[in-house]
Length: 273
Ligand SMILES: [Zn+2]
Image 1 (cartoon, rainbow, N blue to C red):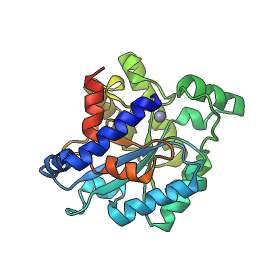
Image 2: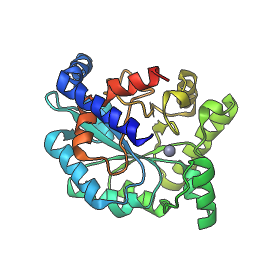
Image 3: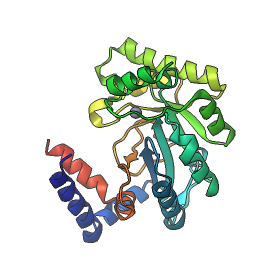
Image 4: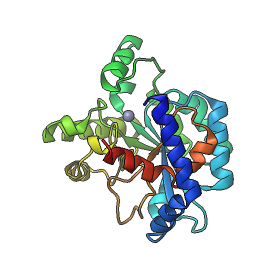
């Protein structure tokens, strides 16, 4: 996104907060139950920024675990926050887990197992370039790292075997991507894998038919990257909205996104395309 578009977007988000539009967004969501905002992050190498983010989330809102989110054990007065992380990065054990431990917070980590199985740095680079459309090298999570996360009480989910854009796959390929990823993670970690995150995750990368495949494969919850407050997960377990934060996004902006200022701006932007 160009900086002009960013500036316009941020102005609209601020406008949504100050005009009361965000308040209306929250009121509508609250009619369904307590407010739950699921955040989506990826590689988090900056400990200072992440520490400030979690401090904001614990002081102004209430952080919940995946289990509390699915059981509906939520605060009725404050916005509840669940932190989720996609792909598989070494920063999850180096930065994320220690910060979450300081605040006794539990997160959800969604793994694309093909990345963890890359045997060399060269293959990791190729995987990032071809599968995640990223040209910069990032250190991937190891299976030992994933075990550290489980031992710390975090939840692991799946994110396809090769970070496939499922909307472009045949039905059998989409099923294969989900099945192989889930089986590989369960084989390594021995954990029951209930969560699945759609790679890329926007409305252009998800369709309801994929939720049916995910259910048949054995997943209970599927998540996108369409921003919004999450519905009660026990009754609406599919295509659950998540708000994807940007790298080192200023915390004032994060607060506006959490409080509902970004949701209508995202929808407006999609409808203008
Ligand atoms: Zn991803």
